[in-house]
Amino acid sequence: MALGKNAVFGVAMVKIVGDLTGLKSGLANARQESETTVKEIAKSITRINPYGALIKTATAAAAAIGATTVAAARYGDSIAKTARTIGLSTEALSELRHAAQASGVASATFDTAIAALTRRIDKADTGVEEFAKSFRRLGVELRDDKGQLRSTEDVFYDIADAVAALGPGAEASRLLFDTMSDGGQRMAPLMLEGSEAIKAMREEAELFGLSVDKDFAQAAETFMTQFDAVQGAAKGLAMKLGANLLPQVNNVVAAFLSWYRENAKVLTQGMVKFANDLANALGAVAD
Image 1 (spheres, rainbow, N blue to C red):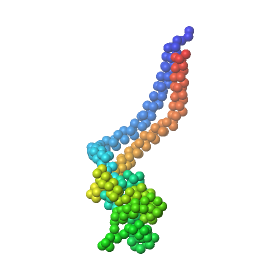
Image 2: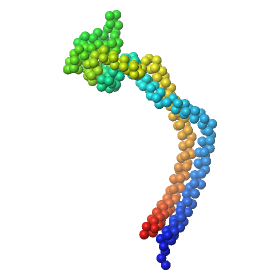
Image 3: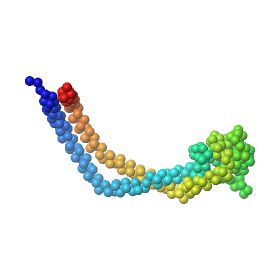
Image 4: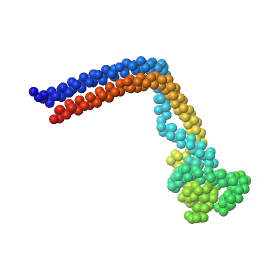
């Protein structure tokens, strides 16, 4: 007498359940073998529980600082360090960067050109004729009426006025290169505006809150130094925690791999048989 579809499916499922019983037995053995090492990990975690409140407090404090504060401090820190390198005040650098960007000149290009200008002012003042004649051609004096070396910022404005008077062209481009290297040529869109327009854009930067004064720059550098130290301490704590837990974790992994190597063939055969039986059962229902 032929079995109905439901009966065929029922018989197949009985076989599958029987096969799964054997598979469960094998997995139970693996669990028993690794149980001891898992308990050891739990004990290790229990031992560090006294520090749990401290870790939570530190995490909450770090979150309270806020991404906005960190971003502002990182920017101020960058301005402070770059300003010292290229020879501008923090106010001048932050505001002139805005003017440069408004003219289509990238901040990196501006920084590179100003750094080159500072170096060439120094070389021209110490008698390097190659650079001194470039400033003379522009009619730019490097020393004031008292014989003091003028600031990079003041010389920059004079160059802008001289280039603006020349207008766009090969002569202006060449003199920008001579005084500020290849970055100077890429600064042409800004320099051709002249000093008054550049100063107006600086005022706009201050109005927008983009100016970084000396006090903020110093506070930002201090903050970032401390913030980096906190991040280093957190990383060190995580490494110490990991160093204590890794041996126990390695034991668990090793126990599992050992059990799997011993039972891989049986597991594979069991899974294949399970898949075949399931496919047969589903096929019987579909027919």
